[in-house]
Length: 89
Image 1 (tube, helix red, strand yellow):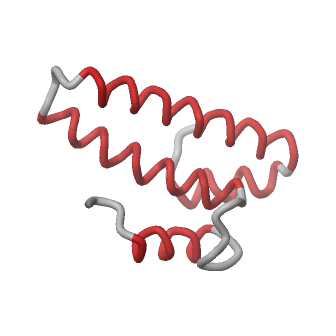
Image 2 (cartoon, rainbow, N blue to C red; image 1 turned 120 degrees about the vertical axis):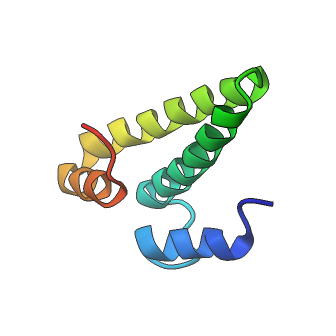
């Protein structure tokens, strides 16, 4: 599997408050970004995989919603996560 428990803990410890912090917006955004990158690479090789394409679009929407939430609540945390993940905007 492309996303092991160790990789999740690494993402959560790097972007969240601790390695068990699965609920913060930053850790969820980091997890979604990792999954989006993986699905994007998959779709580059499998152009006609429309199920994966739909899942990718759904993940991008979820990440956008979390980013909008974070932007409304705390602009400094929003700017920090955008910079850390190299996301546009």
